[in-house]
Each structure stands twice: as C-alpha cells, then as structure tokens.
Image (cartoon, rainbow, N blue to C red; front, side, top):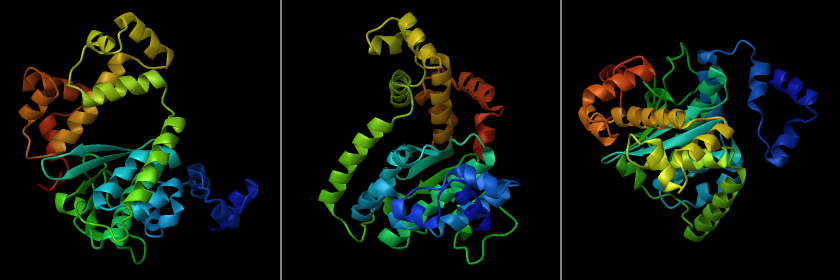
Length: 312
C-alpha cells in the first residue's frame, strides 16, 4: 500500500480524494507499484481486488446493479463497461440454454490484462451472490495457469477454472432467471437510458468501424466487402477508404469477427465443428478448419479440447 500512496502523492491525489470522487486508480499505477508483475501475481491481485469490490464503486453502473430484477439484467450491464473503463470488454454468446460471456483485456499489457479480466469476472460473480443469493454454478474460466497460492481467505476456489482456451464466464440458464433481492423496474429502466446515452457519447471506436463491426458480428458469417457496402448504400471503394481513414480494413474486421464468433461457438460442445462452420458461412468444414488454423495456429478440434470448455 505504501507504494500506491507514493504514486498517489506523485499524481497529486490521495485515498480520501479517490473515495470521495469515486475515481478509479489508473491501471498504470499497478505496474508502477508492482514492476515485476507477472500473470501469477496479476491473478492473485485480481482475486483480492474482486473480493473487496463494493456495489457503490461502479459509478454509473451502481444504480442499475442494485435495482436489477434478475441475474440476466445484472449480467447485461457488462455491455456498458466502456462507460466506466476501456480496459476490458465483454462479448455475449447465448447458447441453447446457458450464456457464455467472453471477457477481453485491452490494456496492451498481458499481465495487466490478466489482472483486469480476473477482477471483472470474479467481481461479477460476487455481485450476483450479493444480489441474488448463492450463484455457485456461475464459473469464471481463465486462460492463465493456476497460481501456486491464492490470497488468504480467498473464496474463488473451484469457481475459477484455469488453463481454459479463452477467458469467459459461464452462466447457467437457471441462474440467469434467478430474481434479485431489490428489484426496481423504473429505476433500472431510467438508469439504462442514461447508460445508453453515456455509451454513445464515450464510444472510443471510430464511428464507421463500429458500424461495420456490428454488422459483421450480427449478420451471416463470411461476407464480401460489396455486400457490406450495399448495406450502407455506398461503393466498395468508398467503404475501403473510410475504413482506411480510421486505421483498419474490411479484411481485418471480417477476420476478427469470424475468429471471435468461431471461438465462442466452439466452446459449446453440444455443437459440432461442422455446424459451427455452416453457421459462419463456410461451404465445408475443411475450409473452415484451414481458416481457423491460419488465425490461431491450431485446429478447431484441438482448440476445443485444450481447455475445460463449457459445462453443457
């Protein structure tokens, strides 16, 4: 703690000011306080911070968290993480019965990513416990190895599963439908309206890139640049220029979208690899397997088998 106090003094602030203003400690402070930070230490820090998380420490998300009617409404608030931080994002994948939520760190530092992803997943599970009772069936899957020891008194236990192929939360349907203790539909609706407005104001992704990415994520699998350009009533050359001006390309966005969707679908072991290939628009499983291996260096079957996967 003394290291953090020294950093805060250098930054012209202190603990009381942070608490009174509900400000967040920048992640770079952790790197400054723990210059030798590695994945093991980051996992331990993420667990420790999550077990101290308070409902009132989430700024604009605090009111809808407390007033949510069901666990599904609590979980949906991960959509609004960009309102309070750009360090972590969530991607939803509804399954036949349950829900998988991929959690990704965006810090540019793999060890800090480990810290924020671990913190985010476990904090959400702890909040569900507080708001809806025992939610022990919710599990956090981490692609990092299990640390040699956990923080003293840690309750993470079997709910944090290590060496997974991706970082994700698994929420059973019966937990999603569980009622919360303090439902207030009106307060929740008003808070969501404000969050939608805040999210629109704070959108950090260039506007056209965001629109194309959303179209790719929610449309059919393999798309041509012309078919996407038609959606915006522009030529493919205009689409190329607009994306290039925002520092990306259609090819990059398409591959990113297909990879994310493929990885999430492969976590659901009730779906075959051939079914995943068909859902993403590939003519046969061989073409899909070749594409997946070019993205990840491994086959879809090996990716599926290299971690604990989703409980189905």
